[in-house]
Length: 119
Image (tube, rainbow, N blue to C red; front, side):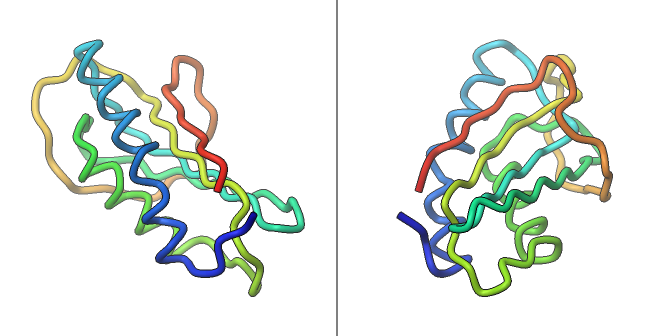
């Protein structure tokens, strides 16, 4: 099953981001790099990463980064989304949470936390 709109795809990502954020807080960690994986209906896969200025462990911060990447860096070429995955790397002890971010090309770092719900 594929999701036809970006808004529905991001809305479906709620459980993943909450699960990632919950795992980070449970371990007393925060992550600097948010990863996004999008697979379309024809099984083409795009991966993107966004590095935050400061490590984050809140679901809202994670979903804001995912929305920014999805909106600005993913072109579905009119195809629906089959899979949307969210991960966090660049782990550090959780101290504070802020919002700024910058783009990066880094992906799949060791020690990352991920959730990949199938849509």
